[in-house]
Length: 468
Image 1 (spheres, rainbow, N blue to C red):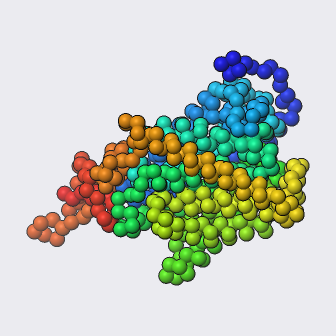
Image 2: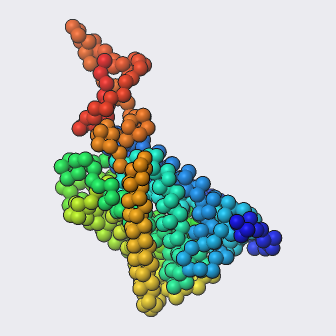
């Protein structure tokens, strides 16, 4: 504890820039919006009886990880004084040494600003992973799981990727905004969730379809909006490189949505779907994340197009390999993250990095052939660590009384909203003719009478519709 509470009085704030500080604070707010955005995206993809719980789980994950980040997450993930290549020290534990002094990664903004900005990345990541366990996971164990998972999975991978002495960073892997710590880690954690928790009741027999396309569009819009800060803010400055990162982010998302939609159009009866476009846009956003501060706008078209097509076909893997990744997290974030990492090894450009004075060797377009190998090594390390450690955590949870993660069968049939939370996302009213005449009689709900929750679920709407 001596190290934890020791305060270094030396300080150098001469390089702090108010414009950079303002932009990163705005970016933190933008990334904050991505957590409820994921919740609404997942809520729309799930069946209506699980809609509320999906949004709630994302908010719970954000809150738990924010507390973990304050206690030791920031220090473990991003300590700039740790000398080992694998994990940080406790210099910034309880944020005691975090104040106006800049972090080594962000010399022009206060350390407190950098800490809260990075907190939003950490808070988003386990929320993404929970999509692999959608519609069959208990809420209570998720609270403890998010704390432990962030400590054992996210923090080490973030340190490898971004800390000054992280081994992937020193090796030369390029990860501008979280291709490995956020997307590959969450995607492969979702795969572990799907395997350990098992399939939903009816998997392979029923066709699980999104229940609310408007929620999907809303969630995608929130994610797209927030991703401008997610990638644009990773420059930790308000400069030309931040602008380029924002531009390529938007281009890749647009191209991803278009490419996925076109492929789906020919594969699904010559019809367009808002769901397909939104999935493709998110795939494009995922893929461009590691390369957003390294690639040119024309390359962003390639990122979006490749991610949209590859991730579209990756969705088919769950049917072929018989694992129930309920909300396609592995296909979009796991596979999409790897696609983005590898394409960064090809298209990373010295000239783009130089927009703010940074120097890199570039990728294949700059004849730096080794970069692809560095990207592949980082992807494999992040994927392997996340999948194995997540699987171990889930196995241990399942053998501890009271911490089993899967909801009981009756609760799964009724839906996690009513079983785990005692709430409905939707309440419906029916209008029926009164006996003996053609006049209209309103349901008890419309008349404001008390409602009794029922565990019966309709195969058509998955909602409880109560009649007078």
